[in-house]
Image (cartoon, rainbow, N blue to C red):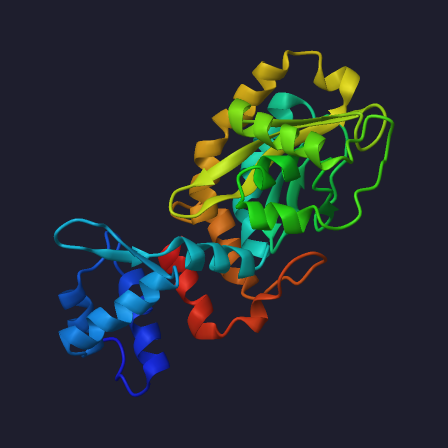
Length: 294
């Protein structure tokens, strides 16, 4: 039994905790038993949660319930960046040395795309993406790689603000930006050539998380002359080769190494750097769902 049900909100949260504790989902009867609820009450709660997008059912005869896409995205967006940096850093370090240029991880926060971690090659400092920086939705490759896969309403909101023309090649007309987004969906990667600053380029790939969608992207940025020494398709393949370990790191299913895991444990606190959501604003009980979900 998870917790004595003593209020409607308590019952809803107990149901979510019950589902989060199961890897493969739980049936109505299992959730009712773990929450000490009548089956009819549990069924009604689950129907309401499903209608709100907080849980999803398997659709099979058994109708196992799992956490919904809306809740998973919310918890990812609300989590602090400390664990992201610790988990992703070894992967970014290896990738930066392989590509020989700056590599970075970006995340969707609300309707903005923010850089959250970066790495440079060990043979010299080349920094073009600063962590905590909001990336222009009409310019940055990492932003395009994420926003191209969002619902139309979210993309509209992301592009509703000023779209400054930073260089002669910057696209500011909505039809041109929408075309860029379509090409990202078709090609599976995004680029930025001379659009943010003359002489600088970037390539980014979306990170597809099951049950969540695309809220992260993995990219590389640098001088165009250096980035184009190899075909763009080869760089894209190098980025894609890093997706599997990056997805494991984002889901926190498998520590990158024991030293990093100790660092996660020791960190304890929360990061509220520029462009991120302060996890301390999420109640502890809700934040406690994150390790179960990811």
